Image (cartoon, rainbow, N blue to C red; front, top):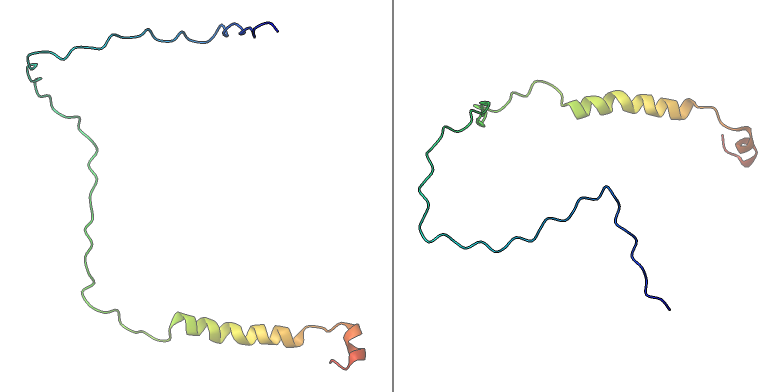
Length: 94
Protein backbone atom coordinates (compact mmCIF):
# COMPACT_ATOMS: atom_id res chain seq x y z
CA UNK A 1 0.00 0.00 0.00
CA UNK A 2 1.36 3.45 -0.85
CA UNK A 3 1.68 5.93 2.03
CA UNK A 4 -1.23 8.35 2.35
CA UNK A 5 -0.55 11.66 0.62
CA UNK A 6 -1.47 14.90 2.30
CA UNK A 7 -3.57 17.33 0.31
CA UNK A 8 -1.95 20.71 -0.25
CA UNK A 9 -3.00 23.42 2.27
CA UNK A 10 -5.72 25.81 1.08
CA UNK A 11 -4.44 28.96 -0.59
CA UNK A 12 -6.31 31.33 1.76
CA UNK A 13 -4.89 29.76 4.92
CA UNK A 14 -2.51 32.06 6.83
CA UNK A 15 1.00 30.85 7.42
CA UNK A 16 1.78 29.74 10.97
CA UNK A 17 3.73 32.31 13.01
CA UNK A 18 7.48 31.69 13.23
CA UNK A 19 8.82 30.14 16.42
CA UNK A 20 10.13 32.75 18.88
CA UNK A 21 13.24 32.23 20.92
CA UNK A 22 12.65 32.39 24.68
CA UNK A 23 13.30 35.91 25.90
CA UNK A 24 15.80 36.52 28.64
CA UNK A 25 14.64 38.54 31.65
CA UNK A 26 16.42 41.92 31.82
CA UNK A 27 19.02 42.15 34.52
CA UNK A 28 18.03 45.67 35.59
CA UNK A 29 14.54 46.77 36.44
CA UNK A 30 13.04 49.04 33.80
CA UNK A 31 12.29 52.63 34.75
CA UNK A 32 8.69 53.14 35.86
CA UNK A 33 6.51 54.51 33.10
CA UNK A 34 5.20 58.03 33.45
CA UNK A 35 1.68 58.09 34.83
CA UNK A 36 -0.96 59.20 32.41
CA UNK A 37 -4.48 60.28 33.22
CA UNK A 38 -6.94 57.39 33.04
CA UNK A 39 -9.64 57.52 30.44
CA UNK A 40 -12.73 59.40 31.55
CA UNK A 41 -15.66 57.04 31.76
CA UNK A 42 -19.34 57.80 31.89
CA UNK A 43 -20.51 58.46 35.44
CA UNK A 44 -23.46 56.38 36.64
CA UNK A 45 -25.43 57.31 39.74
CA UNK A 46 -25.55 54.47 42.24
CA UNK A 47 -28.73 54.40 44.26
CA UNK A 48 -28.37 53.06 47.76
CA UNK A 49 -31.08 50.91 49.28
CA UNK A 50 -33.07 52.63 51.97
CA UNK A 51 -35.41 50.80 54.30
CA UNK A 52 -39.01 51.90 54.38
CA UNK A 53 -39.71 54.46 57.05
CA UNK A 54 -42.82 52.63 58.21
CA UNK A 55 -45.20 49.79 57.40
CA UNK A 56 -47.53 50.31 54.47
CA UNK A 57 -51.05 51.04 55.57
CA UNK A 58 -53.69 48.37 55.12
CA UNK A 59 -56.14 50.09 52.85
CA UNK A 60 -58.99 47.69 52.22
CA UNK A 61 -59.38 44.13 51.00
CA UNK A 62 -56.28 42.29 49.77
CA UNK A 63 -56.00 41.92 46.02
CA UNK A 64 -56.07 38.09 46.09
CA UNK A 65 -59.34 38.04 48.00
CA UNK A 66 -60.88 40.54 45.59
CA UNK A 67 -59.76 38.40 42.64
CA UNK A 68 -61.27 35.23 44.13
CA UNK A 69 -64.55 36.92 45.07
CA UNK A 70 -65.05 38.29 41.56
CA UNK A 71 -63.91 35.32 39.46
CA UNK A 72 -65.32 32.34 41.42
CA UNK A 73 -69.00 33.08 40.73
CA UNK A 74 -68.29 33.63 37.04
CA UNK A 75 -66.41 30.32 36.72
CA UNK A 76 -69.11 28.38 38.57
CA UNK A 77 -71.89 29.97 36.52
CA UNK A 78 -70.11 29.11 33.29
CA UNK A 79 -69.67 25.49 34.42
CA UNK A 80 -73.32 25.14 35.47
CA UNK A 81 -74.83 26.85 32.44
CA UNK A 82 -72.82 25.17 29.69
CA UNK A 83 -74.84 22.92 27.42
CA UNK A 84 -74.65 19.16 27.99
CA UNK A 85 -74.14 16.61 25.26
CA UNK A 86 -77.20 14.59 24.22
CA UNK A 87 -75.43 11.25 24.82
CA UNK A 88 -75.20 11.88 28.56
CA UNK A 89 -78.98 12.07 28.89
CA UNK A 90 -79.44 8.31 28.39
CA UNK A 91 -77.17 7.45 31.32
CA UNK A 92 -79.13 9.36 33.88
CA UNK A 93 -76.88 12.43 33.94
CA UNK A 94 -78.56 15.76 33.64
